[in-house]
Length: 334
Image (cartoon, rainbow, N blue to C red; front, side, top):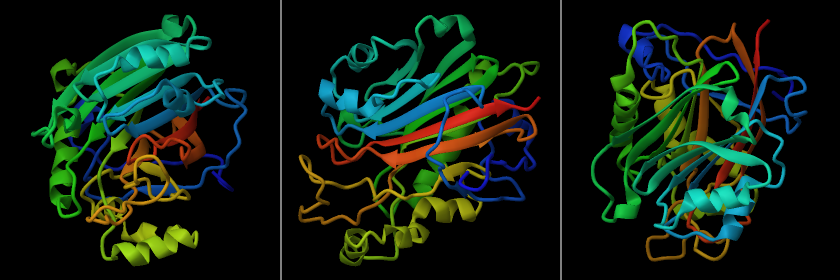
């Protein structure tokens, strides 16, 4: 990435239980935290890779328009798989709207839904013939945040596609800056619970795990006005060290050995609906990168990965969150 062509995710030492669930380890003894990698913004779409995936996460705040979904999935459809994770989804038929937006290029391969928390996987036309396995699961982590459209927890899809064994997880964790330990605990419970009912001691584990969603980790140690001043001056990179997600991963609490692109885009929450101005309500929240995409390769000797894009989708204004999009390509070692 950037000067590096591949991402090497550490193997670490995994307990028998975590190996069984194949969702990546969270707190290995020799923890590495989250590896930050540069996106190279170049991709030849499978010419030098075996699988290219576009991943999108968006907290919709209970609102949707067809035009927003078209913007969300983008105009460049040359990827092999499109993964869309959504939180606070309205009651509209989002699956149908997404299918309409992708009708010329992609078909729906699988979906996992738990009320307002939804995950969709799309592939090129007739690519369902390349699927050897597809299972879905879900895990709730408690209340509904006061409204049904704010369901907390995770939904997941496990799929074997073109010989790659993958797990996609989209989640919506507890809100508020003070609830760091609660979010950490939710991450661990989700990791331990998903697909446990399908456990087969003879099954081969997943090779790739991708988490996406509104993780709700905030900035801490800085007030809203100094943070906004840095953002206005395009110095938001100076805020990344104050993010709870990277701090907790460095402590060995969550997402050990996962990778994430560099946060070159501005914090994705909280915006005024209808424009790109940060929260002007009486709460005047500190802007934060609540919406994230993380990935982990279980055996870097078997698979290499290249990150080609990690960005926010700033031309969508119907929510108080901006969507986040990543483009990752994988290659099997010969």
